[in-house]
Length: 534
Image 1 (cartoon, rainbow, N blue to C red):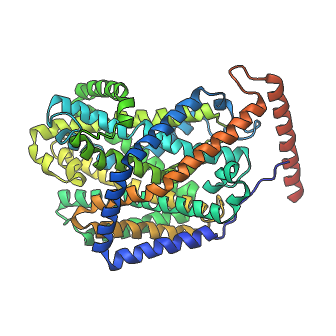
Image 2: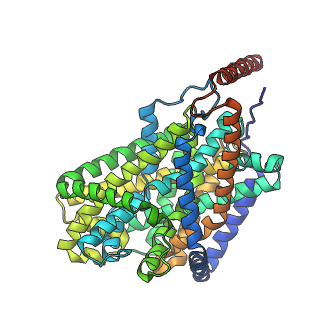
């Protein structure tokens, strides 16, 4: 009988090494903010210049691998033992995927990204009808299949090895088919430290965006200045809130905040859909989705070596996004994995790819189309920084103050939710995979996340957004090799499992029945052992 491996609540070597690295990074950024910002910018430019092609290829490869899993016999495997029932019913499970797909980025870039693509499109002439379609198509591209395929691979591997192979929920353990017991030693520790570092930077980038937008909204509505002092105060207040939420526990804090996010986002979306150019929104959604699918393969691999306009655009947008999603993948992946026990691989991949993609398309259609149309009539919106564009647009709509307050509340709620969730995930990663990390460890990571976000804003000066983008690009580069290794490891083990069960287009039912009976026997032995312990 396979023995279930359990993590402990105590801090691990991963916690020690990762906290030292993050601590050194915070100290250098605090003492030498300008030098730190210059180094981050130059490192980000170097990665983009020399490895932009690499980011595009591996991201496209992951998308095609997910599509392969949907049609492969591997898709029939269950994320768990054959006797495991689905932990959540389908509708609540899909709602969780929806919540995971909604974040600070959707609010921050909801109108700002389509407007900026409209002003500087990848290939079309700026401020034309072609530029508007290209702007919407490009935004859909950044928030759809590529994003969620990245999350899907990490979540799939974690769920598969944790629920089916009885491993603890650490990314290093998903590499056991490749590395054997070396995942329990220094190599495994190094992998988990990389995952922690990527998670911290990825989440800190989101917190930085949230801080910029809250500051921008307060400035636009109440005249509060935009500066690092105000941003520091915002981070301090929100840090206190999410640490209180983290202390209350996952089931209470994050559950309440997720419900709040969903409610506020739904209200904001419905209002914009009704008072905005409704028919144009729906028509642009259809046309731009068609443009996305029509150019999907080309844009997934196009590095634009002979097109300077698109090459510059790729550096500022697509490559930044692919890096950001890579650094977010262990964070989002851990959460998606936790709620997906009992699902088949096929069902899991299809839902994770399609549901959040549909949400993103609908969301950006409403906010992007409305934003561009209003900005055409009010050109000064085109001159606004990204963090204040949304509030400038709301100012031209009915109920402007109400919409702006709801948007501020939504950004703040997403800020708290992201940070709260991240402290929990980082606690798991640095407590030997324990699903109940201690509050002390979560608080350490909560403070670290806020400190990194503040340091990135401080080192970026007036170009804080550029500093956040550079940090995401740099942190994702080493972690990309871990993602590729996880993909290969998962396929190796899942394919062997598929062969063992005789799964094919027409599965060997006799062998499957034998496996089910053996698994049920193991389940009964586990239950009997637990009863003896109790």
